[in-house]
Amino acid sequence: MYCGSYTASTINKDPGKVVMSDNLPFNEEYRLRVLKQYEILDTAEEIAFDNLAALAASVCEAPMACVCLVDEYRQWFKAKVGMDVRETDRCLSFCGHVILKPEEAMIVADATKDLRFCDNELVTNEPYIRFYAGVALMTPEGVPLGALAVMDTEARGLSENQLELLTALAHQVEAQLELRRSKHVISVQSEQLEKAKVIADSATMAKRTFLSNISHEFRTPINGIVGISSLMSSTSLTDQQAEFLGTIQKSAEGLLGIVSNVLDFSKNEIGDGGKSMTRVDTPALVDRVMMMMRPAAMAKGLIFNCYVDDRLEQKLMGDYLKIEQVVSNLVGNALKFTSEGSVELKVKQVGERYDAAVIRFEVKDSGIGIPNDLRLKVFEEFFQVEQGPERNYGGAGLGLSIARQLTRQMDTQINVISEVGVGSTFWFDIAMPYEDAWVKPKNSRSTRKLSSTVGRVLVVEDNDVNAMVLTSMLEKKGCDVTLVSTCDEGLRLLKQGRFDLTFMSVKMPDIEGIQAATAVRRMPFPACMTPIVAMTATIRKEIESLCKSVGINDFMRVPVNESSINRVIDRWLIRSGSVVGTQPPTKFVSPIMLPEEAASGSAPVAVNDRKAEGAHVC
Image (cartoon, rainbow, N blue to C red; front, top):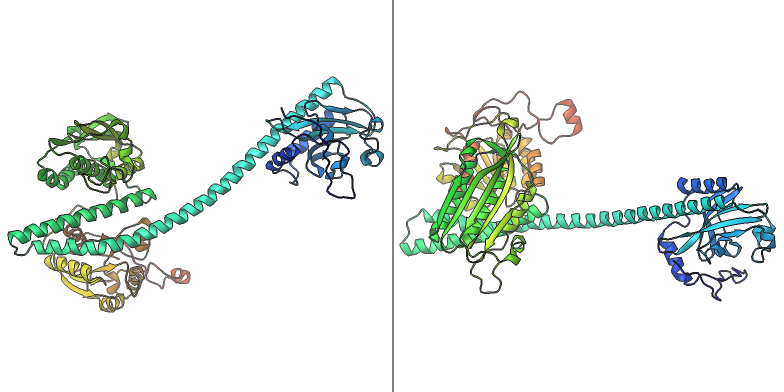
């Protein structure tokens, strides 16, 4: 309960005016600070307070009522009945006396006979107050803020029932004040959160842009090392040269793996992972992981076994890329921390729903194990079980962190049990719908095996190393390659319509690759039909969407490798070495056009759809 007391202090805003002849509440400065925290003074009328004031006047049969708050110099009315003024000086305040003894109601039967008010202007002049009854309005901590009061122009009193009702209504006003303050606090917090979100979004965008740029800078030299090493490995080398070259390749691939992990972690952290439900051939997925991880297991002399539940021959739906990356990260982590013994990958069905199978992916190793107090920390970014400069195991410490991010995006989580010196078991369960429960994609095509492919290919790349690697790999596949270092030169050659496929770097010094692609799609037939493959260090959702909107057909991440080259050639070049389709389409519109062009149908539109097997339509 707030303590009301007496002090010799008085308030005087205007030296020519007496403020209050009575004393102030004890700790008045604190009371005023609390009042200001409610942010209610000088606010507009509110129906909730108006109704309570009207109800007080009704139950007490009084012509006047008010919800009054007392600040430093005045009494201010949040709600009023039968009164024209919105505030009066505190020196005239009846409520100022109520807050001196807030624990009890103040009843003034006849103000003309009360020494405190007999010469008060509100008594001697309009509105000629005679009767006053007020109940203090207090905070939950007992700090008095003002009063709920009723007044009359005739001397009178209140019945016991009326006083009880007035007190109950005062408690309702207090509740309304608290509700209002809570809403204000929430509003302020929401504004602060919104501002913080804007700052965070800005920082995220800056981070995203930085990662996009720095990934390009990182991958460009690594691409050169990996590409040239790959090309050199197919030449005649001495045993020592082959050993040295192998060391270079492993080092470059290790560095590339760390860079990729950092970029993947950042991409998932800012929500760029995206979601994609596709058909998942679980045995094929396991075979692919086995193929990727077997060399590492053989190099360490480990037994690497995989077991797949026979029931998983049925096709299921899921996010193939995320599942594959999580499993690869878990297997890679197991191989990394296992010096002898074995690593096992088990995939089995552990449950079933009406439209989905619950599949468990489990990786067990006989490695060093994890102490109990570190089982959660191993999923933190950049954390290493071994600390200090003399660690036996390398890496950036992001594999498990990325795996956790990806499983969360798939609405599941990774579990782990481990014993130091015995080994660890990581697993996650995921509900994978049966394929029959999903609509099959339209125009699905069977995979074609790559055979001897000949095509006229234009490469637009300003980086000498990237250009040399890509050109060499394409020529090995039998492609007739033309290399240019500027988009201007590439556009000039494309106008002649003599290329079956174009590789174009997204970042070019003269014209951005996206702008160049837009210019290609505005060219006359057949130049506008040339498939364009964008080369970029990182493929973000917004970049991919922008590229597709201007008619770019495919993407290839650098550094390039033979598998990515094979995929692109197999998709966009046919076996005979020429483009299928020699006649222009009946309607051909550019992907970027003015509204009036679209309305008139005069501008061409590029159609990003392959109407038939092997046909190329931009």
